[in-house]
Length: 408
Ligand code: SF4
Image (cartoon, rainbow, N blue to C red; front, side, top):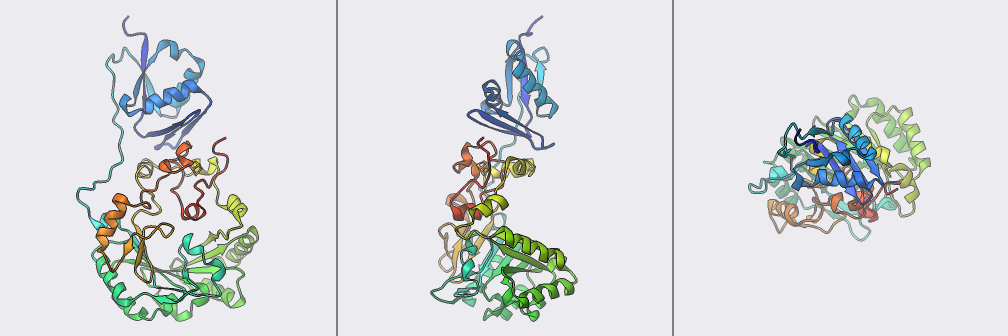
């Protein structure tokens, strides 16, 4: 009998894994099953070897190692979850090799359309006494820019040049944001310019500035996202009721309730229920002193993370780019351009060609390629590729672990 002394252990190409000191995670992207290992050095060493690209996802296991109960039990669960297999060396004395996909983006033929999918345009910024308590919301989710020093409106020529540059691209969505977005001085010419383009348009407006006639812009490819802060006065409450009753297709309207406390969440839940709002969302707002609210409402625990069940494509993209930011730009009224408003600007529209700025952000920028794998403390965590990408909340708070008990 020859070659009886060892087996080959292989790991499937659709299984991803991370090993961090005494912990390891294996995740099958096809059936979404996982294995978490704590304080079992034999197993973490084995997994490290399996994941080492130099080993071609196949390792040799001696018969003596295979006799160990811990190893035997691990391999049993591993095979049960279709993560890999064990072969006798009689099957092949030469080492088998498994090809695993590597995430790459072809950069040789840069096409702007492959790198730009959404543009957010702030048509105005300025003082807004009513919304002032939410002035930092702009860094957390789409919200008007509030600036106590002066009122600014985007120059129409600048806007025109931007739309001209975007027109040939199959851009998915253009977001228009403003304190008084519908009162933008060049609103009618802007709508005329956009109306025959392929863009999907999303208009973000505080509910308090919405007038009935504004909704005529809520056409086939247009959605109005209403930003609703609390407490809600009677006038705004009636607007919500009227919109809920009159909108034939509620998908054209999005109700975004900005909440800061559990009491506000309870009040909004009641409104959502009373008016049977279909397209309604909570927008948690960090006001500087409600971290405990975020801990209860936004922070994830391992169960939340594991239930996100990302697929192979999503995981591969997380090795390369931040899915929240990639392909998205924000333009402020004076033409300043950002890949993420929490990062330094990447340029000014007037100076440069859009394609050059986008290329630069992709090659050298800090936003689109911000991945958890490179971010502390996520770089020490086994959930780094299962967690959603780094969010604006984390950037704003400068806290890159919106999670509970993950290092336990
Ligand atoms: S430390 Fe980072 S990667 Fe780990 S669970 Fe928290 S957010 Fe996710």
